[in-house]
Structure formats: C-alpha cells, structure tokens
Image (cartoon, rainbow, N blue to C red; front, top):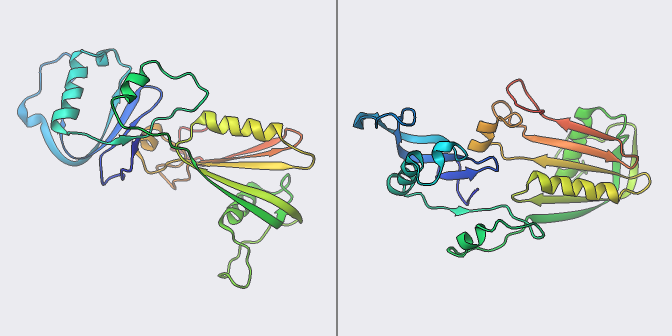
Length: 256
C-alpha cells in the first residue's frame, strides 16, 4: 500500500494478496487499449484525464515477466507516469519470509513500523445488559464509550445515555490499534481474547476499514457506495456465545 499519499490528490497504489493492483493515478494519459494480441491503437486513443483508477490482474497469463502486456505496463509506469512512492508491506515477525523479498528490500531504505496502540482504563462504567440490548443501541453505546461521551455537566449537551437495564462496572479496558492490519491479525486478537476470558467477562472487537480508496471501491466493501459504514463488530461472552454485527447495504458484496 502506498504510504503518505492522499486519495484523489496524489498517485496511490495498492497490491492485494490475490495479485491484483489498484492504481489511483492523477493527471495522466489514459491509453484506451484493445484486447491483448491486437495491433496497437492509433495515437488518438490516448485520452488526457485528470484522474483514473486502473486495475491490473498480475496473476493473468499475459502478465508473465517478459511478456508483451507486462512490458507495456512497465513502460507506462516508468516512462509515462514516472510513478514513485513509499510503500507499506505487510509482514510480521515469526512468519516465514518470502525468499525473494530479501534481495528486493536490500535495494531500498526500509524500516519496520508497528501499529499505533492507545490504551485507556475505564472506571465506574455504566454498562447495559449486553445479551438483551438491541444492536443499534449497543453499537451507539460502544461508540459513545470510545468517544468518551460521559454526559457530564462540563461537556456539551448530548442525548446519548446508557440503555436500560444497566449496571456499573468497576473497571474496563479500551484499546485502539491503528495501522496496516490484516485479517490474520484480527483473528489472532480474537483468539487471545477468547483464551483469556474470565467469569462474567465479555469483549467487544470493532474493526474499521478504509472507505475512500480504490481498493474499497473495487472490492465493494461495506457501504462504500452508500453511507461508508465500512466496519464490523464482534461481541464475545465467557461461555463462547457471540454476536456479530455487519454494516451492509444493497450494493455490498458482504457478508460472504
């Protein structure tokens, strides 16, 4: 994933695990190409555009290194676009590294980056009955807790209150992680929370994705074409019961 680039303002590139690349290119000459193997289009097939989202399937047979389509793509990126960017590459300690990645990384300056972690200890937290609370009220309450809406006299007037019935928790922990997180990272976190569950305990995991990106558009992520609610929430209890909340719409490809 390109790093420190702004959608619709700068060139952005993403390479997904399925071998497809999505490029959000600003101010370029777009080649209206025909099918592979046909003669090159005439000069007037180049169209000047302010921006374009280009998707390329690198797993296609025509994209084999040295092939005609591969060389055309390489020439377009190097000569016509002069595309240069910093990249975030997902890799985690303890996993077997791709043998071909070491020679590649040795040609560039690189450093390891970890997700930003923020922890907050919550005291005397009003908590609703999580098993009977309706989904909308539950998600609203979780959002209010995350935003720190306590409805105290020193803050702005708010109608957000803890749903009834409710009880007071002596302590809770709120943890926020921000970074290039993979589905495997979320799954590992869920497994750790399940293994550490204590009596009368619960855990809630809310995952927010990138809404405004060519990857989100192409993969039709949650609500990307409507309200942008690209998130899901997993509420887990000590007895291994759980509730899964997905924000979906009529144009979404989710849930799977």
